[in-house]
Image (cartoon, rainbow, N blue to C red; front, side):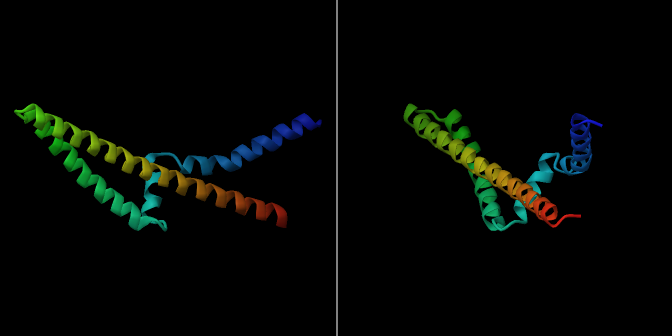
Length: 122
């Protein structure tokens, strides 16, 4: 058996070993739930609460914008709507960045364990 066949067999064995780990991380909810259990869980709950309040403000501003009679009122409610949308985007962006941080930390821990096992040997 030449070196190419050995490399191919080793890569295939590695794929078979890692496949269950990769299948486990599929889906948004499997990635989203750990941020509610991690060290930043209080901040995550706070940001989610603020996002709900901001959503209410966003809908209210939109309603007021479309029902305003005067141009000055439309400008005011339009600016409020834009600010609320930007706040909502910022909070959702932070939540997804936190989700990615949690996922990345979990993967780094797996690599660390694999390296420790590799150094110790079978």
